[in-house]
Image (cartoon, helix red, strand yellow):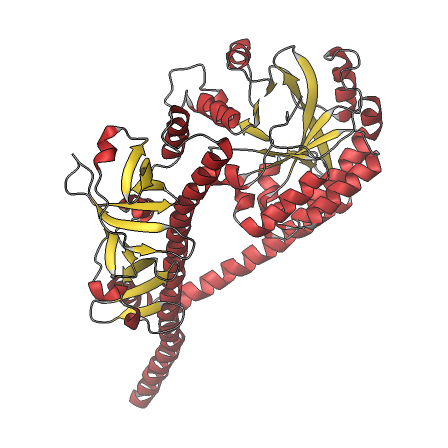
Length: 543
């Protein structure tokens, strides 16, 4: 009996050990994965800081180009106004300057900035940008600034501002000059030895500093120029793994089985949803609603926006924000977009022949802006409707512009079809003025969340006005969404906005209802056909 208990105990012990082996192996793999993930994070942050630095240098190029094309003397009143506009375009730029022989001749910041003593330049990059570090501004002791200058045009920058948006307690961030290995901006612990090239342990700028206990990424933005360092403590990884081992090894197998079971259920559900979505595409369960767009100046309907809906077999209608993200993740979004354009052809081909100047907005997903199939789908739609019938606008959000190179090609191809592009949801998520200057957009849409507060005392009441002014300064038209009252319509009309959309003008309707609605809200011959040509940025977007 005693031997039986001993054998049972040994078997239980062996089973426990065998049960722990995969958990311990998982811990080892988890540590390696945690380090890899940390390096991915560090690479992402260093790339973001690099883009921040690069975009600041681009400001100099744009300032230099605009000043030369305008013909304004740098220190003339008109020249100073242009310099001031570039100075307020970035929170990082303290002032714009004009230099001659290493001295400040004039500044957008007034006479105080003209008293800056630059000292010798630290480096000159391959693109001709001169860098001055350790610049002191009179009246601002204890802060060191950096001046970037090319052909006399310069920016006074507070370098800590370049890394401030990325600062976190678990990260050390630094900018350094690769000529003298001196830090020009820093956050957190940054040993001086990290700036030297001899610290690199591999070719991609990754290394582990065991002396200080940090994972480090070191990047040179350009030879003889600025470098970026991003680091995170190893202790956080060690502590996390130790805590995991202490608490979760005893229940590792049970948890693993539970997770496996849940994963199987989720996979089955996901495949079920994917199959349902494919069935909806193939069996025609999608349909379009059309919400009118009005001219605020004469209260006429000049266009509409196509809104996709999914009607389940049980009769319930699903809005796009419920299934579009899943379609993107499942790789089905191009099929959905193709179906939307097919529905436009089916619903409105006859309507466009009657109203060839009528404008229709069609929404694209972020994935659509990354695929050159999208312009072809739009061209097929135009061909099916008939040349010269309908004037089209595609609406996209900023999320689709993250892959800049591919998105630029798609945007250019869409413009080549004579189709205008509207930026939607601007200001509601991650918004960057860089996108508005990098891409050629025709329309900036004011989100309904800002429309609802425009006539109130809310904190965001001025956002809509600022977006309107921004669009006007960039030569873009503005379309205000979510107008629900006469007061809101009058408010935006008085702000010079021409186009509006919302329940005040009309709710989303079927194609047949749109055909009956438009004649009652337009002037005779208002939508007469015009030859559609690619249009410049200054052209009217919805005229």
